[in-house]
Image 1 (cartoon, rainbow, N blue to C red):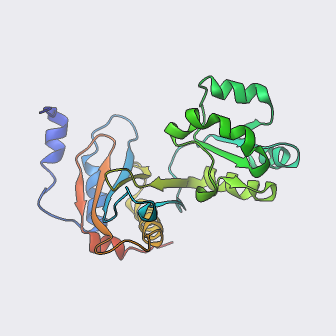
Image 2: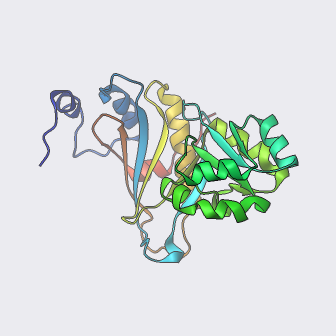
Image 3: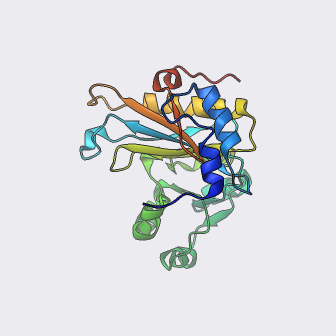
Length: 239
């Protein structure tokens, strides 16, 4: 069993592992117990009452966080003609409209955070599945990243503002960033509330029983803090 360092143990002593905190208390604690010497990311971890082995119990969607993620998001757009022009005007970091760049990605280049594609480019983008898929970068209609050219400006701006994809893993858990430790707790609260609402709306019709079973908050370097799941589901964005 791995041993924790002194900084982790000191932070963990501030957390009652038997208590399920209110969202506000948990957010204050996650800021207090982060011991990284950089601006750590705050993540929400949720255990869902779904069976990911069944196609009708998959949980996958996107959410636009009201206060963003506190980091620069690099957006790549696969588009040609009007779509490429709109992507450039919207502030996309990379425009892919040639076979040379597609070959570069096939060779392993993935220096971007989100990929968006027009429908007409998906024939070429499909060849990149082995590279983009494992990294969660493959454009998909399910996550709104395969779009008509006219929708490119909106999707690029949402991505830059804090558009986050979430997807249940094979153990029925979600792991989603909601901002930085440097955010004030009110901004983290709003981002967490927006995420919880999006997860609730993404509940599969085939799911029975308790849907959101457990909620935990943690920083990149810090202990996990249990959140009362009932109080978490009652959160609303307070903008």
